[in-house]
Image (tube, rainbow, N blue to C red):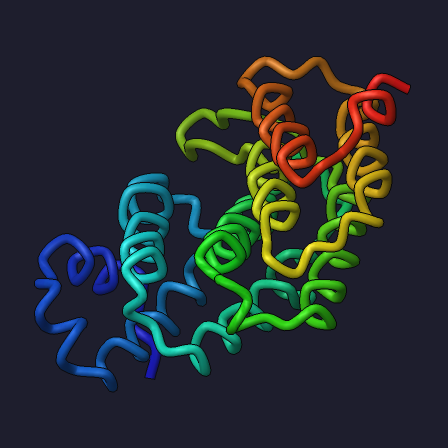
Length: 215
């Protein structure tokens, strides 16, 4: 049973970490509810509660691998990362954008034991397709908070490059994905370009030759 949105907001405001740690059934119910409402237009629930709780759980290693894999599968599906992809001004961007942040968290916290090279390759393809097709490049949306799809996509891209199983042969593909973001018909105003620089820094750390980058 999924917790409804207003109840979820109250739960996340009041829940104690001990309950999440000790009651695995409740934790799974909470995670499923957060996944369902990941694209809510309530910025407090979406940014301050759902995302920060996901960050706490994933960064803290609290979620078992089987559940992380299921979350990753959901985040990359047609109802999340690709939900109404191509829509320019709708609320669907919040679902896509915040799903990408969860993907970034999972990638960044994996030492190579959760995701093998084949799975990372699948994720790479999904990320590249998403960055190419995403058309809603708004940063802050009045009354609804941060959409920030390109910035969050850049975080996802950086986490991909830094992953243990990211292959150096894909460096030029990542540069192409960054180029795709930079050449969208928009003037970025909310540090999206700076977030993309993090992906370039990750490429340099992986051993990309500066000559390739300059070219």
